[in-house]
Image (cartoon, rainbow, N blue to C red; front, side, top):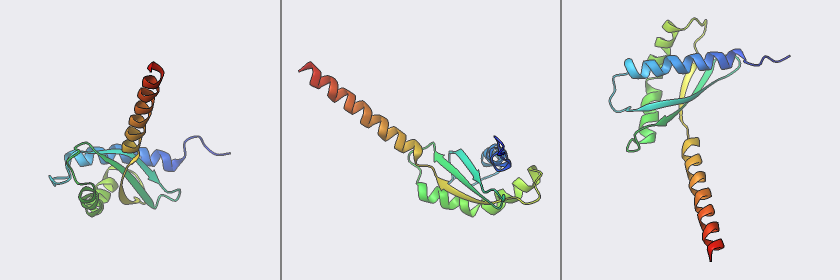
Length: 123
């Protein structure tokens, strides 16, 4: 029987919390800017972790920020190893999370459709 909360999910949530603190306090590169971690997905064997990020500052370049975070992944992995009690700390890979933008675009389309429908009924 499958557990409701797998170990990979629990490790991912703990990693998300620890990485959020590390990005705020330990990463000194000002080019990274304001980053929000939306999700951490860890493989079942805990060897790899994909970290989904979103940018809080719209003027930031997505590709540059993701590249900088991926370059800092060895530092962040070493810091995670000191903070978390894991035999093996997963390899980190940062990916831009497009779901927030997609959701905003869908919401705008729905609102435009509803507004057009209302205008059509008023005529």
